[in-house]
Length: 116
View 1 (tube, one colour):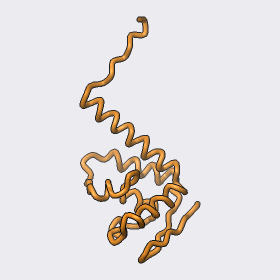
View 2 (cartoon, helix red, strand yellow):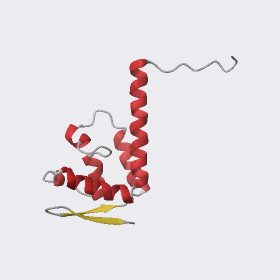
View 3 (cartoon, rainbow, N blue to C red):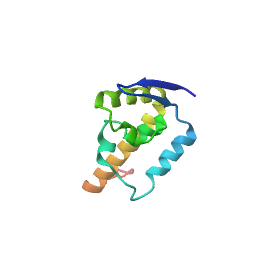
View 4 (cartoon, rainbow, N blue to C red):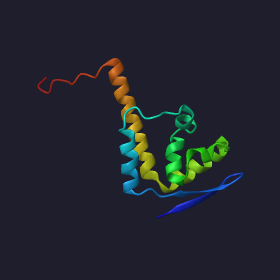
């Protein structure tokens, strides 16, 4: 299992490569309706929530509270480096959810008649 150590201004974090079991656990958490949503945790970084970043760093999200964006981005960069499949999976889930949301708002596209 790969790890990357990232030194921020006031402390050091270690990113861990996620296993398939970790990714199953992450996905199962997405399927739980009505879970709590912290907008700052979800939107602090463009392609990962602080909760998911904490999963990679095996820490609590509150451990990021004193960090600034530059430090969060350094943590995310190391996480991306050793977990490309996880970031790809996150992107696919996000794109799928966006497409579903659009389809529910504007209607599903028509399917052309195969015999025409």
